[in-house]
Length: 165
Image 1 (cartoon, rainbow, N blue to C red):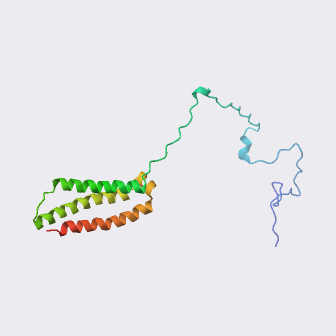
Image 2: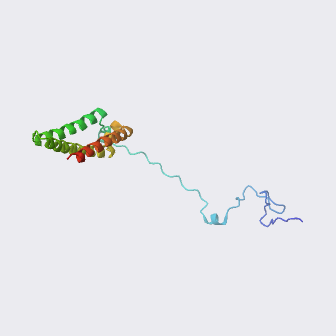
C-alpha cells in the first residue's frame, strides 16, 4: 500500500519544492496567506520622535519625603494603659464613700473591680483592633500575647465584680 501526497500547490510535505513546482526566482515574492494579500505592501513611515518636555527649573517640584508612620513603643503603651487604670481608680476614689461596714467595703470593691473590668475590656479591644501606630510599634505577636494575658485579668475582675454581695 502506498500513500500519494497531493502536490497540487507545488510543495512537498517536507517543505521542499515538489517535482513539478516552478523554482522561485529572486523577483518572485514569497507565498503569502490570502488574508494578507489585501494589506498594503508599502512599509509604514517611521514615527516622529518627540523631544521630552522640559519644565523650567524654578517650577520643578521635588516630591516630598513622606513622614514615617507614627509608632507607639511598648513602654509608651504600658504608660498609657497604666495611666488609664490610675485614672479609673482616681475617679472611683473621688466618688467612694468611706464606711466602716464590711458590706459597704465589699460593695465599693465590687464597684472598683467592675470599673477596672470595663476599662480592661476597652484595652483588649484596642490591642486587637490593629491600630497601625500600635501594631507597627509593638508588634502583632506581642499584642496577641498581651491580649491573652489581659483577658485572664479582665475575666478575674469580672468574677470579682459579680462575686461580691
